[in-house]
Length: 155
Image (cartoon, rainbow, N blue to C red; front, top):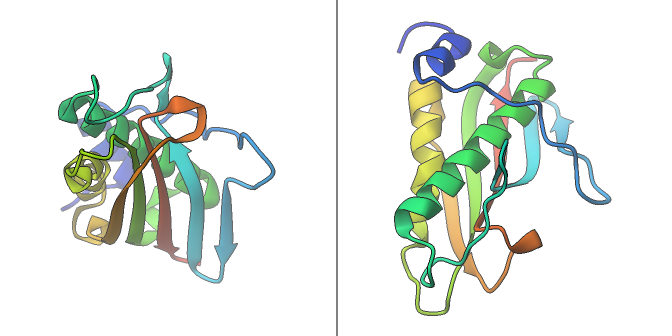
C-alpha cells in the first residue's frame, strides 16, 4: 500500500479528532523504547458516548461501528505519541477489545473487527495484529466498546 498514512485517512474520509483526554488517574499512552501502549479508548465520537449492550437492543453492526470509533480514537492517541507523524508507525502489534454484552452474546470477535479492519485499511500490512476480544457485563459510562492498543514506532 503506497502513500502516507494521512493520505490513506483522507482517502477513507477519516478526520482524526483531537486525542481524547483521560477520564481518570492515568495517562493516555506510555512510550517505552520503540513501543507505545495506548490506554483503552471508549466508543465516543463528536456526537457523544456510544452506549449500548450487545445481545440486547444494540446490533452487531452498531457494535462494529462503535469499535471503529474506538479505533479512530486509538489512532488519534498514536498520532500524539508520534509527535503528529503517523508515518513513524512500524507495526500495529496488538489490540485488546472489550464488548459490553449480555451473557448470551458470543460474537465479540465480529464486533472488534470494526477496529481491526480499520487498522488494516489505514496501515496496510503493518496494520495486521494480534488481538483479544472479550465480553464484559458493563463498561465505563455504559459505552458499548473499549479498545486498547500496543504499537511499535520508529524512534
